[in-house]
Length: 407
Image 1 (spheres, rainbow, N blue to C red):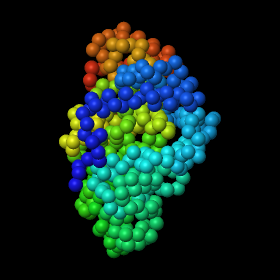
Image 2: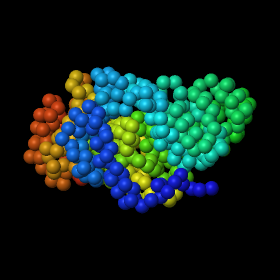
Image 3: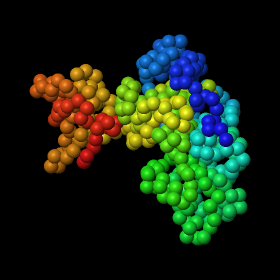
Image 4: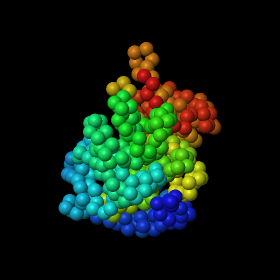
């Protein structure tokens, strides 16, 4: 049994990087034929975007903006030039955000994650992700069939009928949320149904804490976690090494400071930004609103792509203070105006019956004058007064939070 889906997974990191950025200019040229990308990337010369520094100079496109853009210019906000009839399926996700599936095999690139979880040609997979209007069910369905597996398109819910399918088809693997897997196992135990054929699982779309992982393992199922979105497909997946998640091939993943497009230092928590090299529907620096951090080195499983810690929370930390919105990008602007500062963290609390803000800033050059200057900048940018607390460099948590609402 081979350990890797193909040789792309084990190539040298420098070779992968060179390949991705050699292909990126053509992807940019294709993207900029769409009116929304032409406007969004106005003035960009694709031929110059050949490394990460150049890529980081491009503006991010926030996923949170897509519903408004799609509503203004349906269905895809002007970011797609491919005719609708050339796609395989057309979906919607909450927002609404409209998503097309290209007609190619494994169009979301998710077969690698199933392979890493131990699925092989000839296996039967119980797929409990929804097939109704949203892409989830089809993301895993197309990946399993590309891998050579048979798929039971079960969808979520209706456990009694699920048991009939499991007992008849004896699937070796499960795809779905970890929560629904536990529901299936609990109900099978209560009702005396046989689900023992399921030995492997690839779970996603919900938290998979160590306690739940251990419980599922105790019931004889080796479960792996994956992380993805309806727009991009599978972004990263767990491997037998159990050392974080390996980033999928054909994606350029960056981690940036929330509210900005500026990459953080290796190991720092920040927002995931993805550039996909999908010719039918490319995404250029799509900020998906989720936090993670990179892990050093490569996985002991032999896959050499970047590893991330997995999902670590949401990057959109916008909150209201005294009736006014305060956003992460405003906190980032304060840092830009004072380059002697390190990490910043705006803590929102209540003082009596009033909202209160304290901006904690790391610096190696603490002084009363600096605190006063930062306080003035805080007021100028947010239009709100707040206390400034200068702290030692490296003392604030590395959790990606720039606004902590503690009310």
